[in-house]
Image (cartoon, rainbow over all chains, first blue to last red; front, side, top):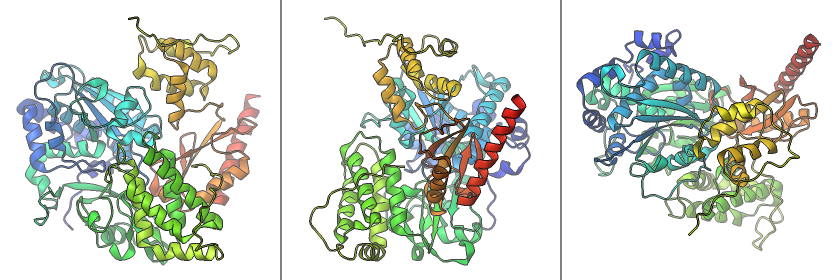
Length: 451
Length: 177
């Protein structure tokens, strides 16, 4: 691990790293030139498939496999959507990539579009990133004048147009079919699958949706090969035949109660403890840690004694978390009230639920109302079981919703209550000494809203 | 069988005409549904918010019922239906900001400006918006004023930040006068 050379962040230390001149000086667009000259689209797909690259957006679906779901014989356009609607609380690696090194992302985007034979790409960026917006737009303009975009790219006969689309602020747009709906000018209501976007996506055409960091990895896979990519990370677990392993470099976002929050790069499979101590300089103010979120708030919680958990696609699930998510670690120190934390999490999901599926719309809203009541000193122990029941019944894993948003809402509830039950019980007993054992139905408080 | 055409809302006369909207619409020739969100964004950028008149005009231009446009516009966090203040404040309420005290910061801002999220102060100077997570978790807790980030704010420093904007506005007004 000590001899790890930054890959995705290598160019960011240079001056004006966001410009084409700086990127080309560092060897940028060489991979694209070579691929267009020597490779066929299918060759790129096979290469990415062999590399074991898995989607960095959260679900960890193998990227090469996703590309092969496109119909082989198709007339008419194939669309490529780059998902830069990074909204998971705690996550900011895409923003760093787009602001500091937009050409790396664009080169990966062009290569991915070439591989999937897409001739139109939508760069879907959330509107809260004004600097990233300006830099990516400038980078796209530079690419058009340098001939990396447009018709007949570098004389290869391949043409590609990239449109920068600005999102309008909704967490659900990060869900791929939600993103597509939003692109079509509608509310971002996720679609029922199948048909998967690869068969019928944007404007009813075959569509691929990939994350910013995923396509940035594609650049380096084409430049240095699949074997190089597989030399980093965690090999498949022999005990689990369904685990394809987690390979390659990864950008970890570290925030919360650490001395040096920030975005750090390391191979897949970095233990949480090492990220906090070696990169983050330990817990701030000499305090002790209480818990950490392994990969964005929707992945659940790790207790302080679970910090040996490796950040790869398989490990967080062994500790009861939903998965790796975006590898955005938020550290909570010993002063954080878990009731307060869970209230914040529920407030977020109640606000961001798109309202399409009843279990999610009602489940997230009612869990917030119950936590409001608990915080108002009218909680009962019974509420904890009811919250767990909500947590166990909303989402695509129990099979009651269209998309995974409410799985993300459920996991913090389940993890917080199961891992810190004593704290919740103490809080309720102390704040409601007369009524904490009450079991009769209780009227809801007036909602405090979801802000 | 006759095709059922969407009912196009005529622009009622009591709505004041929206300046510059025609120029924005003209930059989207033959616009269809997929241009709706960029169009709304451009109009809001120009006017700071979406007025009823603007929505009625867009509805006419896209041949899309105004109710559908409101359906989309109210779904997204970005769109506002009240004029924006001169300084637009975004308070991040993401997890990293929350554990570092953004709830208290948000309360302090509301107390100082006497407005709630989605509102604009009476003097038109400030408007307030809550953002779920602004993606600057390393700087938590963070607020963003007209696109400028202020990192590691506290209940005390946020009041000072607001004061500097007040002074800046007063100075600009003086110079303009």
